[in-house]
Image (tube, rainbow, N blue to C red; front, top):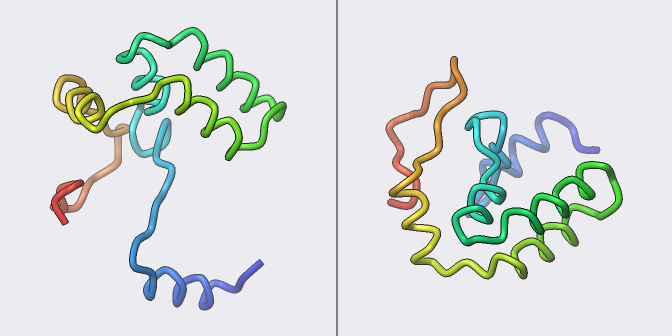
Length: 101
């Protein structure tokens, strides 16, 4: 465990910070939406269920699901263009546009 001030210093000095916002900030579960878009929804959903139940460590589950999906950059961009994520009610986004940094 790190203190609040140590965490703040770490985040402020990082080159990049990544947050899991699926089913919290956005209503969708991104990897499941990508799996559906790429035609492997059933297999990925089963892995997600097993991972959420603790049968697989997060890193292993993510690696295995991405190996099943094998998304291209173009597929991800098309998914986002055709099915943009929806913010959870009450969440406000700053003017920063994702991917334009």
